[in-house]
Image 1 (spheres, rainbow, N blue to C red):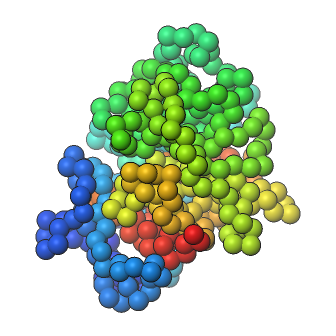
Image 2 (tube, helix red, strand yellow; image 1 turned 120 degrees about the vertical axis):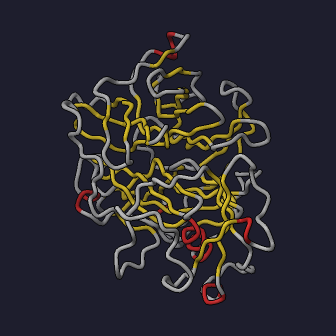
Length: 389
């Protein structure tokens, strides 16, 4: 792992991004939450000529979030032109980290204390889908509890465990909220909260079956909890759009809005069958940056890749830009070979506003967990440059 330097700067990368603290810029940042650390990224004139956004990209970009100087990181390999690049030591979490684990993948991590914590999908050797808590000092080496999470739920019917998979975790105000695909007469979205990743308090399921990929926003929108989801069916859904919902109390959900559908095959084939939200959206002055997965039905089966989109800050069901190209698609051996071949499935990310860095955790072939890196300003530029809207 390397040091804590910010984005290498104006002249080294072709995209020509550089970083400055908001307070040092004469124009000042766009309005943002005062609880977060906000930093400003500017584009030089050389980079502006490369952008095809149809607007003046000399506008500033603010990234919202708490500083994370200890973010897991590895510099872009020499000669690599990818917007997002893989950790050279992938998989970062092997399939057999636990004595009885068949696979560990599609898991979620967050900053916690001086290090990191997370909720991990661990399919055991009975091939049961279970959730486990884990901790790490550096986001690379993980200690995952051998015992499954036991949710504290006042309603026995909701709290009766059937299965759980593909968790997401987000901190909202003073609690960490977990969403996952919860078994209740079919897949639906389970919701729980914790303060210490030891005791988990389960709430009502968000929706009726069938639903997957429930992802909470990191702050309330218009005073309400906000959630992305992907209605589905009982099996390997051959369809899937992303929807938005709101709740005043995490129990009653409404204000359902359509966000986006799969793209046309002729336009962007990697996301032409179905799509679903990935990690928790990141708030920027350009909109909510959403990393999402898309699926291609190839002659050799499903292929899961992931790309990016920008959503309106106050009306997140309105898509501002959506990448036509993927950021990551199965390429490496550990992504191509496993229990479910050809899968790259993002469930979590860490980001540091001061440097613009992002670390993305993603499931590989439904077997192990991979890690990839990038710069948020570059991903925003990529999203706009390859926009298919």
